[in-house]
Image (cartoon, rainbow, N blue to C red; front, top):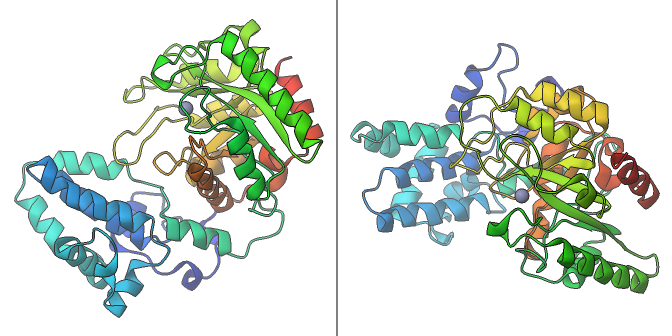
Length: 395
Ligand SMILES: [Zn+2]
């Protein structure tokens, strides 16, 4: 576990009552959260309060405030101390009161009173259970700033993002525009993974379109003259039985295949066999957003993850840390298990626009919390290493 290896507590600030409560359910001796995240706790309370509101309209105020808090570049404690909390957009008097109570008391009497008077306790508790092990923007930046050995993955060792979407499926921008944005971030490669034809809801690409897309990528790559490289991927859909929506032959058309689940993500029973089938499917290079969880809304796949990770490690299938803020999937706790199992990792934005490429920062932060070395991260490999690994995945 990483807890004993974290920098001095002050660097990561103090623990909150809510986190202590979560941590108590863990094993003795490891009951410290590795990073204290007041902003995330504050947002959680605002979502609790939203869930207790009678109308959608009254929920909206708390939800907007919560969203503003998780993206803040500063600690809300500082804003409370300096009396500037209500300068944050969407933070009105009720939200400000809850946040101030949390910062001063470690809990919110207002939320507790509302919860005690409500019949929606189970709804609130469900929401809370689905908000574990996420990072706010401010916590994410602190993880990047923490001094760790140079061998641990960082923005500096990161060469490019391997899950993103373009207008060929449900993305907002052309491949060329996404590539320009990647180059502007200082990256030297990227992988395009538009959705496959089985996922109509995400405007999945036909195989005919995929061939045209690849011709476009070839033209772009020729124009970069070796300064930048776009890899030709696809995000295949993992069906309920673990099979994919692309045949083995279809998978071979791409340099690499990300297999990711997009349905049957709320079932409480075990889906280990589904995930094992996906990892063992010929041609799969990466297991994308493995759990399919969504912040506050969906817990995602329940599985024997150490078994899935062991199978992935044996086949050198990368486990993705999907940095989309609402996903953060897998989180650092599972990433530690995957690291111990011998896995390699893909740290990706899952961006559907230029703006969303910033989500790579969350993926890298989770990897840093799990102490993943760059050598285990495909995004840090050379083009030659990537080519060799990708072609081996096709057998
Ligand atoms: Zn996906």
